[in-house]
Amino acid sequence: MDLVQQQIWGWNIATYLFFGGLGGATLALGILGELRFKMGKWFGILTSLLGLAILSFGLIWLVIDLINPMRFLLAFWIAGFGHSWIARGMVVINGAYIFGVLYAIAAFLEKDTFKKWMGYIAMFCGFGVTTYTGLLLNANVAIPFWHTPALPILFTVSALSTGCALLMLILAAMKSHEAEHFFHFVEGFDILLISLELLVIFAYLDFARLGNAAVMKSAHMLMANPLFTIGFVVLGLITPLILEAFASVKHSAKSLAGVASVLVLIGGFLLRYLIVWSGVFQYPHGIAS
Amino acid sequence: MARYGMVMNVHACLGCRACMAACSQWNQTPFWAEDFKGKWRTRVTEIEEGKFPEVKRYFFPTICMHCENPPCASVCPTEATYINKDGIVLIDYDLCLGCGYCIEACPYDARYEYELEDLKKDEFYFGEDARHHQAHVDKCTFCVDRLEEGIEPSCSATCVGHARIFGDLDDPNSEVAKLVNTGKAKPLGPYMGTKPKVYYIK
Image 1 (tube, each protein chain N blue to C red):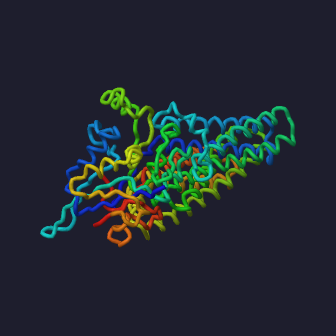
Image 2: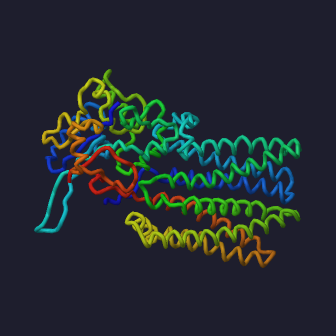
Image 3: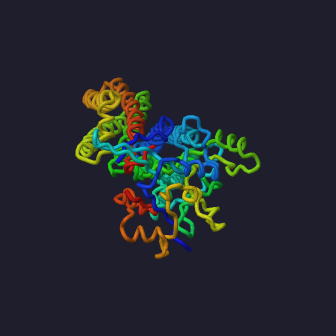
């Protein structure tokens, strides 16, 4: 058996995975704030469009990573919808664009029933984008560290957490009573998400400790990398968890939550990069060149 | 309708790499890559095993395994990767998006990127006869164009030691079918569930 670190996907894909997840989560959580927390139509319109803008920014990196970026239109040829997560991802992403924009238009025109329906479908697509980024890596049977059901869960939780972080930054700058209320909801939700993320990371590494040579090598690479241990786990998860928990009991401590949000965003990016970086092929002996 | 497969007799491989030369000439793969970046449809790797004085060194030919359950095809978003009527895993270059998903998914390292600079080199070396016209992911085709003309793939045709044996696995009288059916030749990594059609005598 030959263990070879994968070199095909790198920064570009990691950047896409991060901004794709962040965009999808921002879209979904922003619409949630407008539909359920009475944040007003402009909040809904601006957060949904911001989410789509972030998603678009991420997609640029995906296109750059193609062998010939000029052939990106072929991505719309989704014949592999039945089995490929890139094809399914295209459908979900297009759904997010179509229903996100329809929601924004309906919110602008104040067509309430239509807005609600479009909003819920756009939220579903937004969540779909966050989950599919994990499923995308999960489908690679040659890389056992990615080929585990924990990865989509980790990426979904992390993407929603970064979405919460971004919304907290926006909400911290707003003064209304509704914004205050939604801020505390997002803060509490983020605390739950970060706790879950720690749990998933723990389970993931414990699974890696026990088995399969390639998975063990990936985990060793991560544990030996300070970007992971200090950068992601300590500064990207534990520190913001403590800061947010502290901020949630002290109502005036929005700046603490702001710092925590920035750390969560950096941590989310590091996680994507490190997971992509630590992918190790497990080739039958003799295959590796 | 056939079910083409190949048997690699590792004991018979001399490591002359004539197969790599023949393949890269016939299929115009990037033999011009300066650092031999692994852009080959077929490779022969050197393997050293054991500790002195019990050391063994041998040559290991590799190729696309033409799996019956190919992970590369199951991740392809555009269905550019498909299995033809003879069980050969092929790529429709016109549909290939170039996302590299299949390269990541292949557990046999059989695929590589045919990049824009390779297209220029291909045209430089082969002129009008150049066969690659757009950037795509490339891999072994069992020389499907040669099979249509009734000749075997260039690697097995050129193999000096008869280490590469090509044939129809469904024809019980063929050499490959006999080697596979008697259990002498075994696939690589069968635990992955890919059902490869290239077998090894080790």
